[in-house]
Structure formats: structure tokens, C-alpha cells
Image 1 (cartoon, protein in one colour):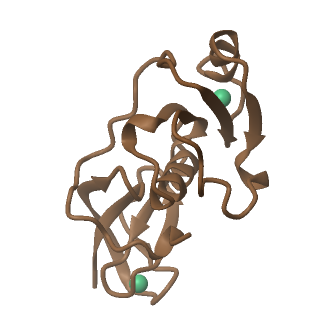
Image 2 (cartoon, protein in one colour; image 1 turned 180 degrees about the horizontal axis):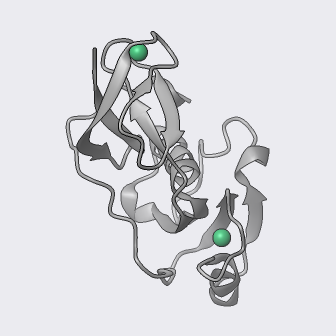
Length: 159
Ligand SMILES: [Zn+2]
Ligand SMILES: [Zn+2]
């Protein structure tokens, strides 16, 4: 799995998380992942479980290679905190899942992931931070308004 070494893709947008709990489209099988999921009023897991019988896995308990070699028809649904959800989506995307094979619900936004163009490291920062030191090279990072759905990272300027 490439994970955080994924080169920053050309297609950039700002984050567009769904505003309400999305319904699950039809699929053969699902896995639900809790990524900083707090079970709050905005949590989707309970509602999703009424729609599909699926196992629920904590993001921290996902074994290496979990997303690799999945059968066609298998889908992933992730609920939790924005930065941690983005990390799971990035891992799944790096393993070959397509956007339409991943359903996301964000309960809260406490962190964001910033990509350093100088060294390629990912730094997790509190949501709303204006700048931060890069975990990889120590340069000062400032986020641009560009966000990659594939990697779940904001592209930054490094100085
Ligand atoms: Zn949740
Ligand atoms: Zn860096």
C-alpha cells in the first residue's frame, strides 16, 4: 500500500463532505469503518446498519492490506472525524477503490492533513490552523484551498 507516499494528484478540490448521513447505494457487501467515530447524533453507523448487515471495524484495527484484492461489489463506508476519515479514504483509494465505492460521513472536524511539496510528508494539524511546521522537514507550511479527495490532504506552500 502506498499510503502517505502517494504523489499528490493533479485533480484538486476543496473538501466536500456530505452534510447529512448519506444512504447506502446497493452493493453486494459492505464494511463499515469507524475513524474517530464518536457515536454522536451525527453518527451514521446506526442508520447504515439498518440498511445493510455489515461488520464494523475500528480504523486503528484495520490489518495491513485490508483494502487490497477486494471482490467487485464490495463497498466501504467510513464514519468519524474529518482528518481520520480522510486517512482511511486515502488508504482505500491507494489500494484501488474508486470514489463511488466509498461512502463517507463526517461527524466532526478536529484535524486536517497537510501535504508538504518540499519533502512529501503528511502533517496532521488541528482544524482551522493557519500554518504549522512540517513533520518531515520542519519547513513552515501554509495550506492552499486545494484538497485532494484521493489522498485526503491539503496541498501546502512550504517556506
Ligand atoms: Zn460515527
Ligand atoms: Zn516537509
